[in-house]
Image (cartoon, rainbow, N blue to C red; front, side):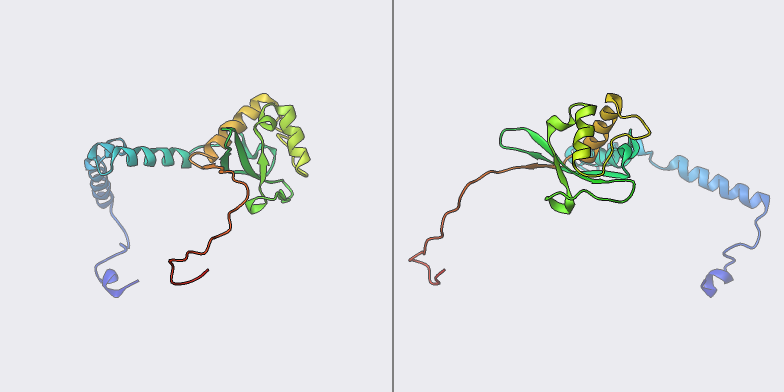
Length: 184
């Protein structure tokens, strides 16, 4: 603590009841004269598109999971992969209660969750089991209601994380540009 702040009496050694009342009154006055969070949008600091993006991100960050951990300690939906046929698969990472992680071929040992494996609780439990020592909803139930809660949680996790798959086959050998000064 600096000598200057101590010389000015900060922090105070004791505050009288009147002093606390003054502090409270000043604090209350500052709160009442400030802009409420609901009114910040009216100040037009940001464009409508930026405001919408900020609002969506705040809602996503404040989201309370409907189904904590889905029976596993952790499950992350890294992103949605939209194929050329328009069908969406999910890239997920699983970690069970013992700390074992999925060993998929994708980034971060993630595995692809095809949409048909996500259609019913029974099929999803079978898919989880096929990925390793992973359970769906153990101890908290594992029916369709829990799967619907998991859908809501994963939809929140994957918001604005859509990757479009561009399929191509083969490659073309680079041709030497005769007009270029350097050769390939």
